[in-house]
Amino acid sequence: MDIDLSLLHSGVVPSIDITGSYDIPKELYENSDVVFLHTVMVTGTIKEEEGEDVINCHIEGSMRLHDSISLEEIDYPFSIDYDDIIEENCKKSENLLDILLFLWENIVLEVPLQFTKVSDLSKFHGDGWRLISEDEHFHQNRPFSDLLKDYDKE
Image 1: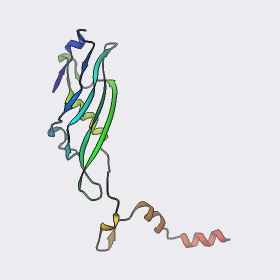
Image 2 (image 1 turned 90 degrees about the vertical axis):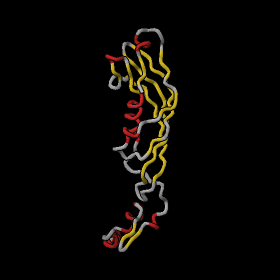
Image 3 (image 1 turned 135 degrees about the vertical axis):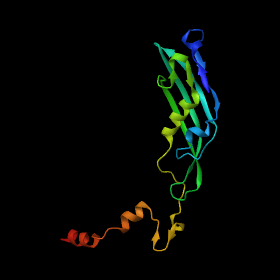
Image 4 (image 1 turned 30 degrees about the vertical axis):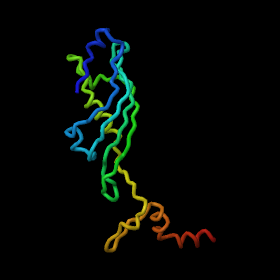
């Protein structure tokens, strides 16, 4: 979805309102960790300052990801405040901004590398293995702790 910036560049309007809800096409996120992207809510404007197109907006929504431990699909909310020049996303020769591509480029930065809502690790086990927390690993996996106790006594 392209936003026409020609009225802004010609000085007819002082700013362009981009407030609204946007549906990001699945083609943009199908090769990422995002399973589904819910409708994105945007509040903001585009202004021209010192010959540059500046966008000031707040982007929020929710994306569905796979849980890092259980692999279940879970919703992950995000909220982005953006205030910068939109030079890279703007097609200057055509006076157009592809708002959906702009939104996706900023949302993809919010995708976490790992995210889990699992709190009980005891149900994740198998034949000869079990999943433990970092605290449990730190306290249990110290093979020289007995030697250190003897050393501290001397």
